[in-house]
Length: 94
Image 1 (cartoon, rainbow, N blue to C red):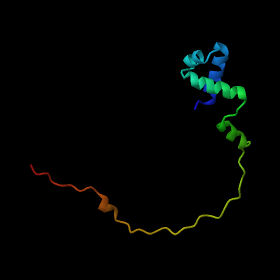
Image 2: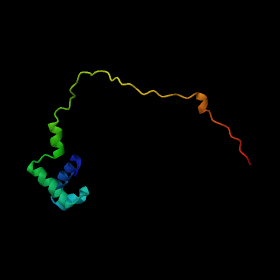
Image 3: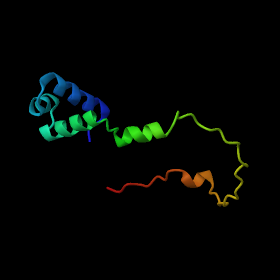
Image 4: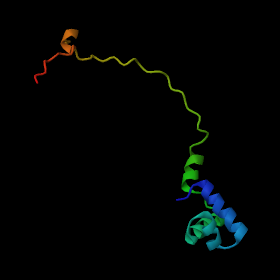
């Protein structure tokens, strides 16, 4: 599916050139795609993705009151002394 910008480019190319194939060559698509886009535009059909955007409304968030603080018991772990993480030196035999 073409995005809105590509569809507008296709419609503009078709209106300027007058044939599906010429508009397709200019826009880098097939003449069948140009035909579908032009016919959909002529019929006034709104794309599904545009319809969902319009149905979403203004897009302003609705604030909700803050909830309770999240309190959970964390597991305890036994720690090791920092000296246990020190690098060890091994003698290399030749």
